[in-house]
Image (cartoon, helix red, strand yellow):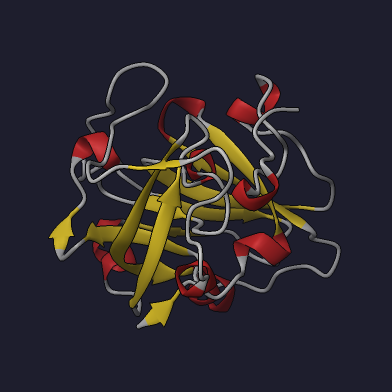
Length: 193
């Protein structure tokens, strides 16, 4: 099990946050109901060869468990979350990333995107989660696969993920293009740009 570094802080609540026991459901638009037979996860962009996985292939990749906290830009924090899924380091092993790649754009259903620097994307506690607290993700929380980036505000943890694009230049994702901070560090209160 990987323990996210923020769970070892003396004070685990970033500035401007309040603790909740519930896991609120937030997203732009409707909950996506993914057709699992048609779902694909594609790694593309600045890679030597594009790779695409169907659900069976993706689920057969090695898994990790990550213990983390969640911090939402709207002000709530939920402590003590256990995720299971595919580490971003495993994604790195599936392709040869070109040396000019510095960023990723994570793609999800309905053209939703979120951008990350490679240093954030490949942090040891970042994963593509398929389970939460021992159970499969539900559609309202991103089934079948959601990105989890514990050290950043939770909008960076995109739901209903369909792939990763490696890029040389940073481009803003969906929320970042609509006024959210480009990085989103909760400890620095990087809420809005």
